[in-house]
Image (cartoon, protein in one colour):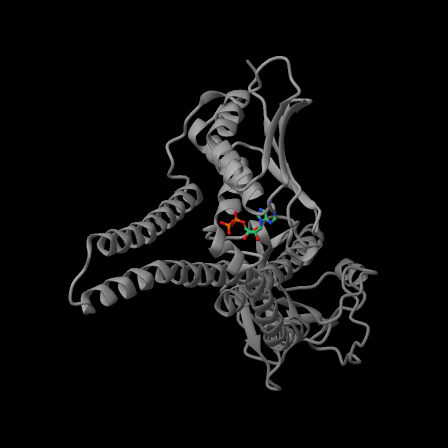
Length: 421
Ligand code: ADP
C-alpha cells in the first residue's frame, strides 16, 4: 500500500508539473503570436522600429534610450502579466528594444524554445519568432519569455505537500488496513476457535467409549479363567461402546458432509404424514419403556409433501421425538402435531419434560452442547442430535423454533416449505 501511495504521489506530481509546463508554453505562444501578428504589418525596414510600433507598445524601451526600470510590465496594452518580458532582436540577434525586466544573459534566437538562467541564477523560459516586414523581408526576432520563479515555487510547494502528506497518508492507510484486517479476520478467528473446540469435543466424546473398551478388555485379560456368561457380558459391553463410537462417527460424518455440501442432493417428494406415523410406530416401544404417552395428531386432510431427502427428514423428527421422550420423566406426555401454515408444514414436538433454561436455549443447537452432560450420557446422548436436526431443517430451507419452560416442558416447532406440486 505504501509503494502504491508513493508511486501515485510521484505520478500525480509529474502529471501536474507537465500540465503547468504546457500551460506556460501555451501562454507564451499566445502572447508571442499576438505581438508578432500586431507588429508584422507595421514594421517596414529591417532592424528599425517604426514610430507606430512605439505607439502600439508604449512601454517599449529602445536599447539606446535611458529607460526607467519598468515596474508595471504592461504587455499587450492593458494586460498585466507578472514576470513576462518581450525583446525585439535584430536578425543578427542583437537586442533593439524590450519591455519588462528581462534576463541579462547570453542572447540567442535559436532554438525556438529556450530555458535561460541569468547572472542572479533566476531561470526563464522563452520563445523566439522570426518577424518579417510588411513587404515580406526578414525584419528580426521577437522574443517573449517569462520568469520560472512562480512555476518553481508552485512545484516546490507541491513537493513539500506530497512529502508531508505521504507519511500522514501512510499512517492513516496503515491504521485503516489494520482495522479492516482485524474486522475481516474476526470471523476467520471465530471459525478457527470453533473448529478447535469441535475437534477437542469430538476427541473427548470418542475417548470415553474407547477408554471403556480398553478398561473392560484389560480387566478380562487379567482374569485367569472366564465363564461363558462373563464372556458374553464383556462382549456386550464392548459392543455397546462400539455402537456408541460408530454412531458418533456417523453423526460427525453427516455433519461435516452437510457443512461441505457433499451429500448427494435428493429431490424426493416426502410425505411428512407418513414419516411421523412411521416414527410413532417405531418409537412407541421406547416411550412405553419409559412410561411415557406418545401421541400423534394430524390436523390436515391431505398429506403434506416436502421436497428433499426422506432419510434426513426421518432423522430430524426422530432426533426431536427421541429427545422429548428422553428428557421427560416417567408418566409424562409427548405430543407430536402436524398442521399447515401458509406454504409450510408445521411439526410441533411437545413434551411435559424437564424443560430448558432460557440461557441454554440458543446453545443447545451447538455441536456437543449438553445442558447436563451427566444426564445426557445416562440417556446416551452425545450433544449432536439437535445440531443435526437444525442442519437438516436448514438444508430443506426450513427452521426449528424452541419454546420451553423449566420443569414444565419444551416444544420444538419445525417449519418446512411445502412442495409446489
Ligand atoms: P443429546 O444427544 O445430548 O440429547 P442434543 O443435541 O439432542 O444432544 O440435545 C442437546 C441438549 O439439549 C441435551 O443434552 C439436552 O440437555 C437438551 N434437550 C434437548 N431436547 C430436550 C428436551 N426435549 N427437553 C429438555 N432438554 C432437551
